[in-house]
Image (cartoon, rainbow, N blue to C red; front, side, top):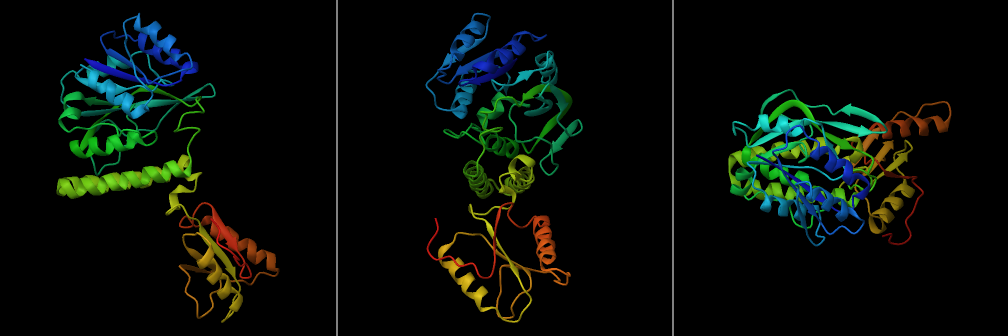
Length: 359
């Protein structure tokens, strides 16, 4: 039996679409657990409607999606568990197909495909070919928990749960431990999940910010270091694979628009356009004021580099254009092409001076 866990918190505009897609499934044997995480927008009324239609409803105090999912896992009695977000939906035969996938109980983790739903369009997410994958083989959209089936005994044996209080990145952290414990997964060729993009309040769509991304990055690396230390060679190999997946994930358009793919400690790079000359005292004083009063990651020189200065990075640019502004334009183009520079950066002239500490 499949247990479907639906955590709900203030999703009234989308909730009926979600639960109706479950109620209208071709297979009616799944256990559907709704965990209303303290909604106060009228979602509770919709949940009660479907409770009368056979779904199991629990109402808890608001503690976040991680604890709501954990609560649902504690109450689940199926052989496999899967998670459905309250603003998404299933394809009509999703549960019937899941039941067939899990009939022999062979796999601990099974990943299936999904559709991206938005602006009246229905586009298939890219996905890997059907097959058995070990960790060194990248599998598309590994970070979601909603497009996977997990054997419940496997999760309980390895004590794999969502981290309490985590409101963003909870899927990644859950899968870090699940994938390493299992050292792989089964990839299905079918798409069963409709991933809607119309909820602008969703953390993975409209509410991202640098602080959340950096917190997730720190947690992932901290958890991986612990797993690698405690788990031996297999865990170290698994941790290295997950880190590589994280790096790929952070280069996605969603993350890149926050400049996260090159960020370090929440700071930006500083870029100087430097004229070609052996000595530059103004630049020396500018760098000194920068180091004393400004928060930044690395310093880049584009153009020339005085013989007695050693910036973090130097890119030589020939400045022989007929007009000065063309030299500046050409260097700016080269800066913007450089993926090693933070997506957002400070552009300084050699006569820029920071007169007091800037927070």
